[in-house]
Image 1: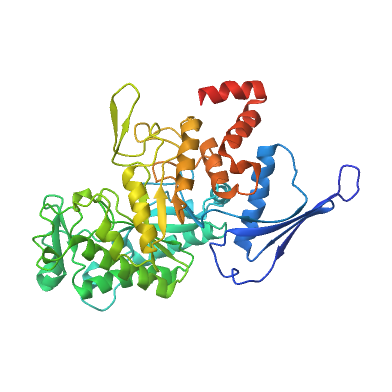
Image 2: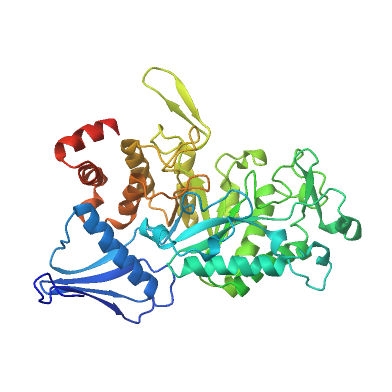
Length: 457
C-alpha cells in the first residue's frame, strides 16, 4: 500500500487472516482472491498460506511482466500440499550434517518462492539419541542435546517461511560385535554390506518401540519438523533386509518372516508414533532400490501392508526402466534421466496399487539435472523438463519430491515450470507450453528470440 507517483493513493493489496478449519493446518494449500478495480484482497486461514499467496502474486506478475489480474473472486489451490525439494544450491549436503551457520540464515523464503513446502536434511538417528535409562543407553550420543538444539534452530528458521524440514532418516549402523548385542541378543539384526555392520532388529518389539520412540522424541521437542523420508530400499532407514546377502537369514526373527511384512510393520509403527506427538507430521516411505532385498519389482506386498492413514508411498517416475530410441537402441534408465520423458511401467503400476489401497502416493522426480551430469545447477532442457512435470501431474499424486539433495534449488526455469504445474490451475499457466513461451519471452526479450531459445531447449 502506498502513494502513486502523482501522490494519490492507488490500488491496494490487503492481506486478511480468516479463521477456518484449515487455520491449524501448516500444509494449507489454498487462499482466496477478491480482485476489484480499487485493489486486491487476499484471504487465507493462516500466515504460511498468506505468504504463499504473496509469492504466487509475485511469481504471476513476474511471468506476465505486468501487475494484471482478472476482476472477480476465485480460490487458488495447489495441486499437492507436500512439495519436497533440496535446499538452495550450496546450502545442502548429502552427509548427515549441513553447513554450519545454515540454521541462522534468513533466505529460506527463496525455497517457498519455487513452491516448496518441505526440504530434506540427512538425519542419522545416533546423533540425536539421549539417555533413556534403559537397555539402549549405550547408544546415547554425548552431543545429542547440542545436535537437537541446532536442528531445532534450522527447523524453526525454515518453518517461519512455510517450509518444513523432512528428516531423511538413517537408523543406527552398529559394529557386528557391538556390546549391546552381547548383552541383549534379541536386539541383534542381520549383517549388512558383506559383514560391515549390523542393524537393530525391528522384529523385536522392544527394539521397534525404541526406534519409533526415538524418532518421535525429535518431533516432540521440535514440533516445527515436517516429517520423515524413510528410504526403505537400498539405503537409509536401515532394517534387517536392506543390505543382507541372505534375506536376513542370520537374524533368527526376521529370517523366518516375509520381508515386506517386516519393513511395513516398522514403518507403520514409526509413522503412528510420530503422529501421536505431531499430527501434522508426514512419513514418506521410499523403497528406492528395493531390488537389493525384494524380488517384487512393484512392491505389491509392501504397499498392501502399509497404513494408509499414516504413511505416504513414494516411487521414482522413471527409475529402472528402458528407453527405446527411434534409432533402434535402448537406454537403461538406472536413475533420473533427462532424456526419457515417459512414465515407467513400474511407476504406473505402483500408482494403481496405491489408488486401490487408498494409500497416498508421491512421485519422485529430478528436474534440474540428470544422473549423468550432476555438477551444474541445472540443464536447460526445458522441453523435456516440461514433459516430466506433465507426467508427474498426470499421476495425480498427493505429494511430489522434485529434487534430491545433489540437486540444489537455484530458481531455475525448470523449477518455475514446476511451480506452475502445481499452482497454475485457473490461470493461463495451467498450460505448461504457455509457461515455456512466457519464460523465453521474459528472459530473452522478444518473441523472435523466444522461438530460437525454445528450439535450443
